[in-house]
Amino acid sequence: MADHPYAGLAAALATQHGKQRAIAPPLTRRLGLIVRPVAIDTDQFGTFTGSIARSGTPREAALAKARAGMAASGLPLGLASEGSFGPHPWLPFGAGGVETLAFIDAGRGLELTLSAVSRRTNFAHHDVASGEDIAPFLARIGFPAHALVVRGPDGAVLASGVQDMAALAPLAWPGNRLETDMRAHLNPTRLAAIRSLAGRLAARLASPCPACGCPGWGQVDVMRGLPCSTCDQPTQSILAIIDGCTVCGHQQTRPRPDGVTAASPASCDWCNP
Image (tube, rainbow, N blue to C red; front, side, top):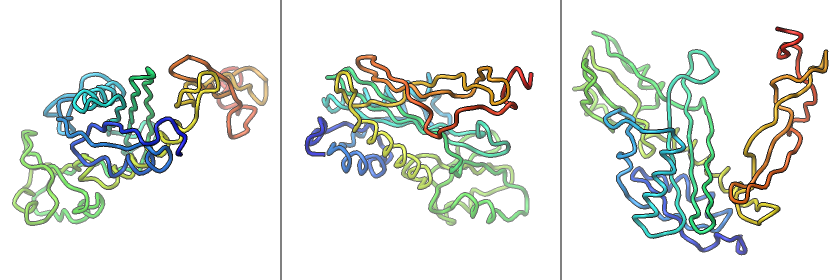
């Protein structure tokens, strides 16, 4: 850690929702990097309630936040995260979350983003019906440790950050909608997902490029074409992993880590057209 290029240096973390609690520990422990929160208005890049729409992709939003934090602090290193929530991309009827974490090193020309999909999210909503008991929904989403947003029948936000029954009871009227508040400081499940991704970022930044020595060496793409176990024709399954450096562009190919060398005929366009 002491000889890492970022040991003792400070990076601006653009956040107004306490994300330093999740992001700082793995980066400080692994790299010696000092994470300095910068309380800029991150809502300008989009809000979960939809009052401000996010423009661009999660990656673009995370990088824009990081740049804003760097500009506000004057630091050449920047960090930011962005979350997206909705139906899980491959698990039917389940909710999913995608966390994206961005790191910028202006001096090296390094812009690195990592993303992770997780089913471990309490993202949910519930329309209150007349005479019903909302306790099962509250238990399922982890209330009151996890806060709620309340909307009226017209979709307008009546309250956000609701974390106690005294505040919720007058709002839990039939026709109103209860939604999980996905801001990190009010959602411990999301904060845990961000912490896990920060650990991956720390490991990535601890890996230097074998060509130029810049931090951030790791997977940048995959090579498809794993041969079918029956007919030996290439399939769309992953054959190998492509590691690379986002600064100098150097790349190397390595076998997939699970040791699989052939694809099932079920995924072969020749055997299973």
